[in-house]
Length: 119
Image (cartoon, rainbow, N blue to C red; front, side, top):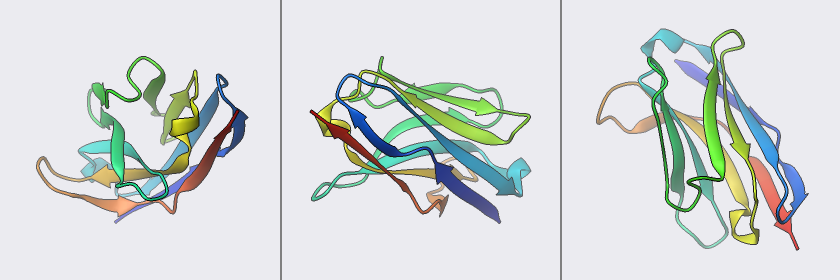
């Protein structure tokens, strides 16, 4: 079992920055990748950033590439998402999730944190 708790959401003006954090606990040695997803009202959930638990490689959706950065703090067992140059369309509920095996679904999810970007 893996437990995930997000924090750091809030209201920010367009062009601003925000940092989300996901506290990871439980059987962390079983994690293959961690990811941040988001879901805006009326839209499908979208994976926006992913990090391999061992090695730290990352990849990003085109919608956030160059603006968002995912990182892992080994000492604190957190996975952070640094968001810069925020746009109105980044408004969504943001979730962190854990994948335990290659090609497996993301089976462990946090409850989400709301990010609202205002003009």
